[in-house]
Length: 82
Image (cartoon, rainbow, N blue to C red; front, side):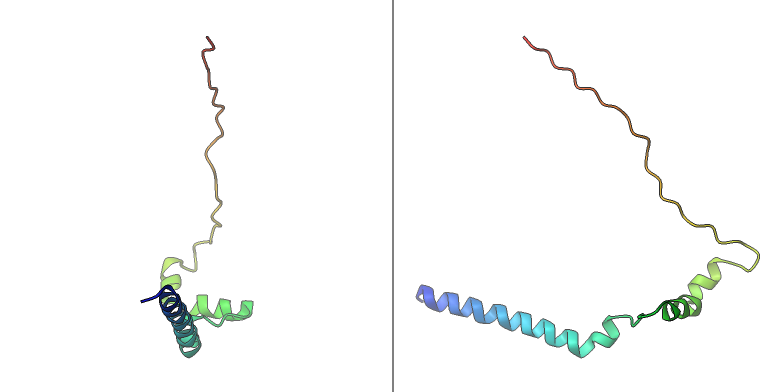
């Protein structure tokens, strides 16, 4: 095979893969993507989730999770100049 044939086969197989992926995405995009355009839809999804209901009860307040980082330490590098 010549170099031109190999390049053409690679280009054709590349584009076939791209178009196959795009085709599958458009065919199954309703099941792949969660349609949550508004905050109301997100709240409905969260409220209908049975796992979320089992984690909290009506008597317990929900506390936010606050991210924290470890304390910064100063690192000194000593070198011996001869």
